[in-house]
Image 1: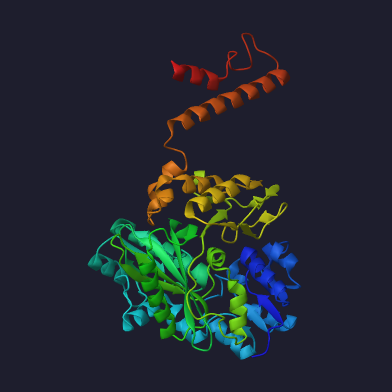
Image 2: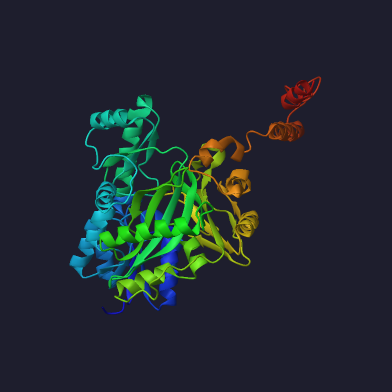
Length: 505
């Protein structure tokens, strides 16, 4: 195959910039696409060319295949990199690229058909003897059928989007009382995220670990795994912290899971980067969960411990080259990634769009910040609120945790609310530092991580309120006429101070 000269990145934000950086190093020209909400985005500024593809909603812009292909043709791009999300796991888009004579940097449509659609992937894995989590083999057509099946296998269960991943379209259901609302919201989110509202059911495993295996395959029959990533620190089924190596895996279990992941990729003639995800129970039995037929958000931690550029590998495999290795690379050192979101943990993680007034990102040895924002940038409210991925490397896990904490202490974002403080609380929590945390860790320790279990913080908050009220009263006293007996309407005392004095008694 001829060398790729120009790549259109069919995505936005930090992943678009991540792909562009490797392209620049390889001497490949880049093309950005953007919605009206992303006119001033960093990925637009960094690209060699940029094309508007529609209004802010992704269903009218980043998910419209025809507009993406029109931009590719207009720019002269000979390849498209989908990043993750949007069209990255859409087999019909892969076929449209092939029809247009444009190289899709990812697996063939046939492999995506086999593994990208989650229920079909389960069927294929059962055929080759890979253990799967109990659940439906097909998407469920109606709410009535889904409810009946859930009652049959017993609650709790998981409703999961058949056409995508990343925690979108996924709901845990405890019983019939919340089934209807979970069904509606799962289907709606799946449609908005992937253009496909099909969902299926899996039995929910108690206290599982979420461990995934990175696989890579070329077009010459070579398939290799690149170790695991521990992804159990999740909120609403969205990964928040990832690390490698997993603190619960032995070399023997890593080899066994890696062999199964390679077997899964070979079974569908996979090509390119992919991730086979597993749930590991308390007895260290593992079950196939799904395969993400794309590059993962958390791929930097694998790059840290292997010394590889996975995006460069994707491009070279797409050009027809063989993998430069045929055996797994044992992990060197330890890497941790935290996802920084524009959201307010104290308000139920409500998104916090708005203008970034000031931004200081951390640096120093073995610290990497993959970001799509800058000071003066306005975070839109139309897309996922992740604004950055901060990752670190160190020789040991303990040193990696310390380095990640140090880096988070250097991270300063003003103008919007972020989850930086929440991330520091996760890394400092004994359950995380101990290494044996499961997917219920963050929900279970929610109040502790927010500091709401510390009675001292209540006193601090009350004192802060008293100080604020006193300063406000002082300002008012300078501008308002005084009533007899003290400042206006207060009897000379702030009600906050009166409340504090009463509390102390």
